[in-house]
Length: 261
Image (tube, rainbow, N blue to C red):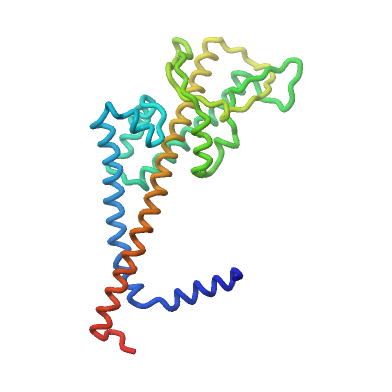
């Protein structure tokens, strides 16, 4: 069967759908949308309630759901909490995407500042150049949309670091890290030689941005998988219910002879 033949079949089916089918669509759609919002909100509340009520089981539950670190998750939830009150699955997915985009915006800024602090990036090394990986991958942070597969790959490449970095200006003890989201670059000598204390603190802030990005990837992946599962469930429930209602309406219309032949 060619594509045009398939298209003709679809058009034929649509044209021959009964009036009762379209009436059921009109009736079911708003009802199901309301049902969807209630169930989505209930599911997200249930997940949150489970985490709060059973703190001893928290790490195991997080691992099952796809989160690798309890402290990182709690930190991220505190950031998200004020934006997520009474939100359903679809809205939480949008919020997670917004947080990820905001983090990526910060990573662009760190890339630009690194060229001032550590030296401008050059294409080829020379005798006066240096190299480092203090530069976030532009292709990654500028990507418009992530698939579940891409998010999984990024998420699987991360590790948890517990060594203290930074100094008295800024420091952190625990973070997510991944060499895969950074590029090895060559730099020319910086025009201004800033104090080492400032450079160390700046590098620690870059590591914090990296950790926040990986935290948000983990959260966004969870929300995206949850949203996909919900949409599959919705289709499984919606279609049989709609056809049942369509059949019921057809029987009523036939009984009262509303549309006689």
